Image (cartoon, rainbow, N blue to C red):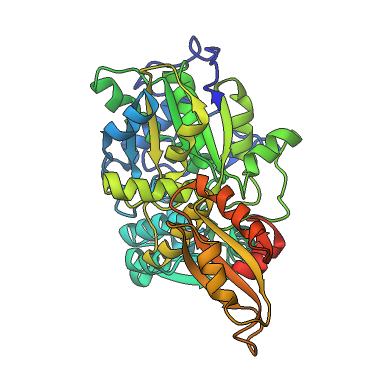
Length: 463
């Protein structure tokens, strides 16, 4: 467990007054200043709180503030005051509508007529679709093949006949490559999901709302837990807090199977991961955005990064549903999952951003499976049953404990269903029941091999 980071206040004296407009900030209805989007490789024009306040006013006519809710269960569990920022309650069930709408509403008439193109794992696409329909603009949206059907269907609902949905690529990065090629060929505007200044500014309005709400509760914000995928949300949130609440610690939480920001920080710049686990689809990005990395690098002193196991994410998804009635998608539960990895000052005020709630009910079998494995309650073995009568009964009587259940039994050789090697899945009542089970397996003298999660053998045989 690590401590929340110390924070500097180097921008405190340089910050503008809360609510003041800065020279050069985008104005409502104005075209994006594309010349200021990227000054050099990876760098962008500075983003200040005033820029985000302008964006907040610009989108307020269509995007209402989401609730900031106190969570008694998590507060008691961690000894701090935990508040949940419910971005899963947006019309598109994700904060992504903020950056998408702010970008599109500021397009020129010529850009609107040429249409827009976007790539997304699902949530950004819904924001783009919503904006296209609301503003009467045609859009083409590319999503990777693993995108849940629920998200695809919602894209069509929000965009109606204004949207052409294209499913392509094995992951977000491949879908994004196709989207960029299409935009370049047709002269359409590419609406970036995270790697653009206007997108970052739009996402930063989450932080602006949080500060207003937490101040209204008579509190100051000590720590904010932010999910990290491409980096749009954390760079927007950090930009705002650096000016308005510089003593707030920012904790970024990445899925262990797609730590693109952690890899970039270690390498000194964005790098492309060779492979990623697509399970946390809203944050499964192979490469952090260049613009996002630039903002994060500038604020290293106030940001702390952690990685969490996908199985732990599943456990928190189930806990949020069973206790608070919140249907969070995997990326939406990253912030809450990170609470267990950070030591906070007692009674500190901590906000967790529930970034999205677009989860397909068909995924819950996999979510339950991953959670059980992560908690040490489900284990798989290859067991060799010899050609002797009563071997299976001996296994049941001599190996299984009173609270152990066989949840999977399958002979690997389909043409021999009575003897040979079988895949056996055992669910335990308690993690501590594993060692006695292993001891009984050894005493019973069965030829067995335990399959370890994360190995190629496990993935091939079990999944």
